[in-house]
Length: 351
Image 1 (cartoon, rainbow, N blue to C red):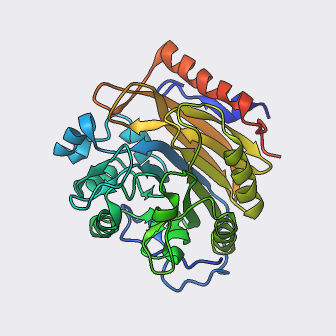
Image 2: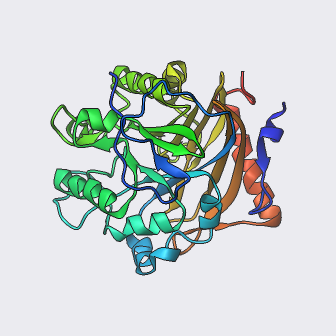
């Protein structure tokens, strides 16, 4: 099948084994945590077509902070695209706290707990916190981030109060299908002090490849679909670097079905690594500065196989919200995304 049949121009808007993470109540009955104690070898449901929606970096800082005055509209006009999916996931590029001390780094992002309400209102079902801003306000702020997620009913993954929690898959049952979500950060800044430990809160680091691979294998044993959302890449560079490509290969070999990425602040290309679908970078989505191409990536999964990927193009607007583009602008934006495939080393179709 040719690539254009798989990554389509969408003219709607334009063209070590870890335990399963516990999760707060989910936004809808169709998207719910697996029952506690459910056996990992319970029979899988008959394959159905699931639509998984992904977007990149989200925070409420600077010009986007004021959006939280109306949480129901904070994410903006791309929210219906997220809400229409069976499962929607983004990267929360922020501490959720009003406490803590800024860490020794250049940029610091934080937001009040109502940020989770805004994400839920947009149809977002889970967020990764495995990134280089989750501990911007130290472990005090990180504890608040976890506590607020539980209180506001937003499942999070990629971080936790211990190393086992941080690397544990979040398993959500979506239309009878068990979807495991894992998150890893491949950013060097403060990685040693931010990583989770045996009794230390923190995030899951990609640099511990052995543990990350073990986490994917553990998820593979108990879920029907395994999705990994990585924070990785070189900022402002639209081609994946060697570390991204090497880590993606290790995750695919371990059993990941879908690999998604963010952090570079620009879009990066997509394609297939054997039978694993990889989208290296989804750029900024709700962002405090600049204007750039963005969008929602919709991945169709049948059984374990990602069978189709549709990119719904948008642009980061003056409010910081993503706004859909239409007509010739949408066609051009979708073509720019498709062209990023050239430097990924990925195949245009599943192998």
